[in-house]
Image (cartoon, rainbow, N blue to C red; front, side):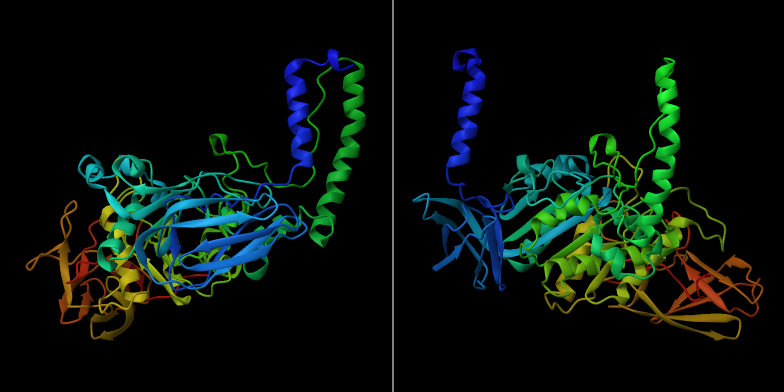
Length: 535
């Protein structure tokens, strides 16, 4: 009998038998490895898998911890909070049943930030503006990079694909440019090790990054929630969906039999309610609910992080006017899943998209999306980076330097307590003064100015320039380009065509390039409108 089995098959069978009888090797997930950064000043979970019942011992930075693997092989150890350290150290793991130990090396302790989203986060260093000069200078031993391979999944995965690397010109080439420039700025300003995790997926949409529970926690997300319920035959929506599907299958079966009997092509079989099959080739599953969360985010939890930088650009959502609720579900869903409280979550405002020169008063989907993103400032511990003056999503070379620095400024102000303004002018109030509207702002910093931003150079003040980007309307709802001027920390807006103004807007349109209100810290104003959105 054995002699009839091909040699290679014997080897395969032997290895399978040996695996079955041997203890399961202790292993850590791929988010732990040589060159990583552990989060400072917080309890640090370390987890993995082993033979059920095995004792796992971990030693790091003077701490020794022990855990016993559960019946499913899972184990978890929590290291006590540690201060930042640039001293390379080893984390040693020892298993009792295997009676051996191994280590992961060159670990630092600092701050770990996750950079996620689509093109704004995905855009790689080799393709960014000024890459020929930036790449050779990208030697930063205390900046560590983890690029998570892009994967979608129909079920919760327990591990990622990817490995930590020290920031060098070779290692950063295919890394998120936004993540690199953000991490570089924090490392420069704070003087502590920084770990950046690039978890991005081009063309992706917010709903694919949300945990399934988030759709049930936001009442306004009825459409995706009912879609998800339709995949579960135990829910009322699912029972109705499966009942209708069964009727279609029953009608299809006789037709299929008849076609087969007479040699004709069999009609396509009706499908039961189910999500799209996770297929990363040609991005066939990018729009489905939760697929990126399940494949790329869930495996990282409960890894300790300092916060999240999010850049989701031109991709829309199921209900464009409800984009805020998708972002709210994303932010709250990640925070709940991580269990770290309300960690920082900073968002890049949609940059330039489409043609310039939109007619006053015309509101398109991209304008609405920016407004929905800005609503997230009402959520705890959030920030907004405005980049339409430096970045567009159709060029072949994208400025990610300025966005990275602006995100770092938000973090330095809001998370690290620096006495700086976190962003550009933010609308707070308005009032009518005769034929003019007076508009006031927060985050004025050193004052308002008309700014001119050219390339990677800092914005400069145009003292005799024209303030652009404002429109104004009266009770009739007709919008006109406005004459605007800076008076102290207030912008005064008027038009000869609107003798009795009631509302003003700033930087509305798909491509608000040319809108030039800045503070003297060189940060552009956040687009706004003083009138309410239509339902």
